[in-house]
Every structure is written in C-alpha cells, then in structure tokens.
Amino acid sequence: MHLDDRLTIETPEGVSIDVTLAGLGSRFGAAAVDLLIQGILLLAVLLALSLAGSAVSNDLGVFLMGLGTLIIATVVIGYYIVFEALNGGRTPGKAAFGLRVGTVDGSALSLSAVLLRTLMRLVDFLPAAYAVGAISIVATRRNQRLGDLVANTVVIRDRVGRSAMRPQDATPVEGWDASTVSQQEVALVRRFVERRSGLTSEARSRLAAELAGRIRPKVGGGGALGDEEFLVQLLAEKLSRER
Image 1 (tube, rainbow, N blue to C red):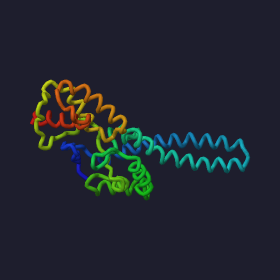
Image 2: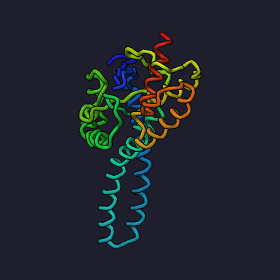
Image 3: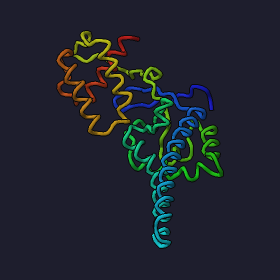
Image 4: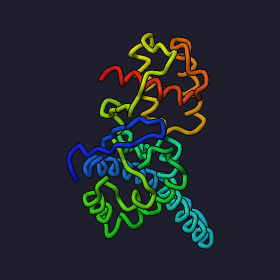
C-alpha cells in the first residue's frame, strides 16, 4: 500500500476521473466509529430484552432470546446495507472520515454489490479485528478487502477537492459558446460528474436535469444530447480550454 494511492476511472463519455483510495488507517477509523454505533444499538436492544425477559415466563423468555438473536443479526448486517445502499456508499463512520464506497468502473453502486461486501465481512473479520481484511487492504493494488474484491468495489476519499478530471481528446462542439458558463457552474457540474455513481437513479436524473436546464440556454446548443451527456461534454470542453 502506498500513501495517497489513486485510481483513474474512465467514463464512457471520455472523461477520466482520478480518485484517492482510502488507506488502512482511515478505513479502520471509520470501522471503529461504525462498530461503536452498532455496539450502542445492540446494548440498548439487549438491555430491553433482558428487562422484558425477567418479567415473563420461561417459555416466553426463550422466545425473547431467539428474537434478540434475530435483532442482533439484523443490526449487524442491516446497518451496512441500509447506509451504503441508501446513503451513497457512506456509513456514519465513513462519512465522519470523508470516505465512501464506489465501484471500480465508476458505475452506480448496486444493492447486490453492497450485499456481497457486507456478507464478506464475516470472512474479513477473521480471526479477529478485521485481520484478514487488513492484510488484503495492504496487499492489494487498490486497497481492497476481500469484500471489495468480490463486489468489485473500492473505498475512496470523498473530498471533492482531492479529485481531478482530464478530458480525453475533447474537442470544441460546433455552435457552442461555453464562455458564459461561470466557474461556479463548472464546479457544480464537476461535483455532479464526480459523485453521480453514488446517487440513486432518481436523484441522478433529477440533478442532471436541473443543471442542464440551467446551463443549456447559456451555451446555445446541445439540445440533441441527454442531460447527463450534455454536462459531461460541457465539462470536458471547459477543462480542455484550461490546459
């Protein structure tokens, strides 16, 4: 593992996105925060079940023990599935350390990928304290634990300022006048393109439509392009002029 490891993701639109991979230290820090939150939740559940069990019959107490086991499994597994699938790849721990889960190819993070990397935590945790996962992160080129390797995911730093884009063979689009697009608008487009893989399809479409609707009238073209394609092409052209 190297400090400030980077991964370049090539998008279908011809834009390269350079992202910084999360290292062992930040990932363990994020994991510690998540485990602390889960521990508090589990302690509250166990305490509630213990109090309930002391006030009921033995048969009902056995039922409550079984229910407690189910709740514990749901908290441990469901915690990661809910946050990573519905919060753009960010658990509270990852958000605290500025990290998120993304895919190696830059596509949207799917529920199946989240499920795979979550279930593989059982292996990564062995024999204790994520020892197998830590070895895998250090040994792999993309700082991936076994769950990441199986799900084809990576954990990246989610600081927008740490990412960079390079247009690949971008050429000016005939009839466009992008000079009136402000730097603030370019920054918004850039942030959208960098983070779109972590958005739900609904949010991704809505944001693309809002940005494209705001900028198209200034450019005076691009009507034949879809909203997202228009934004990517616009960004590539603006970056090409800065080189």
